[in-house]
Length: 108
Image (spheres, rainbow, N blue to C red):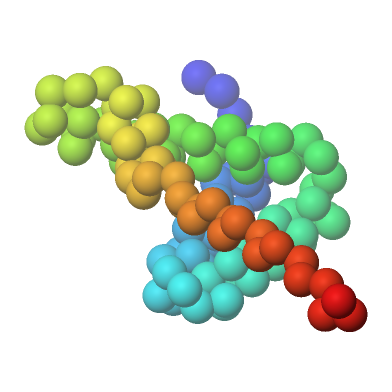
């Protein structure tokens, strides 16, 4: 059995804070991105780069766990489901530029 892990506790709390901040606001509300940014900035300032790596790993684990149950229901790999979820919109299509109109010499 291992002893207490204060650094791990800090990272786990930051991950929870970031997710809660994100979920507290509608998807198009700027506060939904500003608050998690504040959480990560505070973590980086007080605990450094190693804590940021830990946060990324913690969030990746949480995300993988979140996709496990729906993937089981759909009988697909969780990574396949996550990829579909993140790429559910087709790439934007742009109309080709209209042909340039010929330049007419008005002098003659």
